[in-house]
View: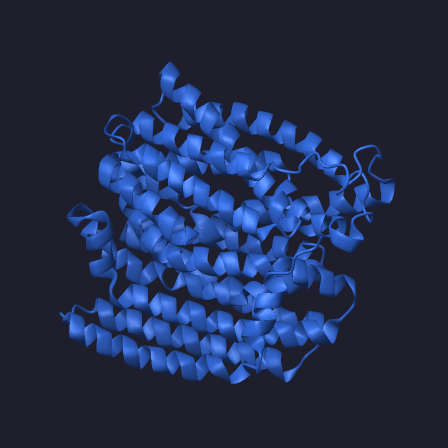
Amino acid sequence: MNVIGRMAVTVILARRLGPELFGLFVFVQWLIEMTFLIYSVGLTGVATRFFPRSAGMDRDLIPGFNRWFLRVGALVVLLTSCFATVAVQVFSDLGRVAPVTVVTFWAATSSVWALLGARAQGLFQFKRFVASSTLYVAVALVGLALPQIGGDFLGAMLAVATANLAAGACCVMDIFDGKRISHNEPLAAADSILIRSYATNSWLTAIVASLVWSRGEISVVKGHLGEMAVGYYSVGLTISGIVNQGIGLFTGALWPHIARAWDKGDRDELWRFSSCVTNLLMLMAGLSAGFVMCFAPYLVALLFGERFVSSSRLVLILALGPLGLASGCAHLVIQASANGKFARDVTMVGGIALFVAAFVLIPSFGIEGAAVARSATQIGAAGVTLSWLGKVLGPRAGTHQNVRSFVLLVALAGSLAVLLSIGLELQFGSLCAVFAVYGGLVYAICSRGWTAGLLTELRTASGVQHA
């Protein structure tokens, strides 16, 4: 529901602002997000990794962590607000006082929500996080629906910033509760060293991952093709991003379970769990990507209007990238085992590959070249992750089967994209038949590694509540 709501916000923004202003809005948002990633120094990753040790029966494992997190978080919000404002002034045309002030407010509220949301997830407060996301969507939609706000670029920024503030306020409950984590004890030296190491790796990983898995190449698109191209490209990213957001929320809920299992040394359980979940993720990603590819023209016209229909060709290419999210569970296991080092290295290499490919392909092929660079990088990083899992948990049949299934899935989805892009004018009924055949093949590829009771186990793992 939250994914649909967030997409509704993006759709309304695109429809009301048009391609050029929507492209400018996305670019400003990207500058704020990148500034936060730089100055947060991995703090959101630290929250989801170490707050599980401060919840429930383990609440006394890291005394003083909550107090330390709040102090560092306040500094992060201040730095992000200041330097995001400077970045927007330097790299965009928003030179007036009012827009710059709104950008500062936007940067501050988005930082607060990001930090408090990460804390809520780390403390297994998933219902509260979902409630905050729902509140964000509701406030943003109400603000954008007002004629005097939603139709204006400045008003649109203000509406989104206010929605961030409301969502952050929803997560602020119990933050000063001394019963959960002691406020009086300082962070122990050993804990500080461990957190610092993880934060550094998580920080580098998050920055580069934002380029590989998010929309970092829009800076190259804007530099070569302008803000209108950013608008069209963002529409393609938004539709293909439905798959990213849905699967990303699912895998994020599994992180506390995986982190705790690794800390307990239960390698056999992690191998079995990861193998089964990877097959389920491949099924989810494969079916979702196929649906988006088959009905891309209809989705673009229905959601964004006829002005953005040309983005449907981009969707065919960009929808291949989310297949890489099939490695989400394996990525989390490796993240726990290597204290963030593997994720840092593979995403850094992926980021370099993405920008090199974008610089080479965009001048010759335009925004289609950017889409190819993104999808190829995502799929490549996923293949490396699935292969590396065997080195972490030991070479087993399940990990080899995951790699083979992933290769088959990518080949199948790529063939579908080629079929739909060669110019055949398929009617809606024919597209439904094509998707049905494709879906059957995806199920045949991905269902081999399932075990009885998997869905029940996943609900238990992602919904665990600790008093």
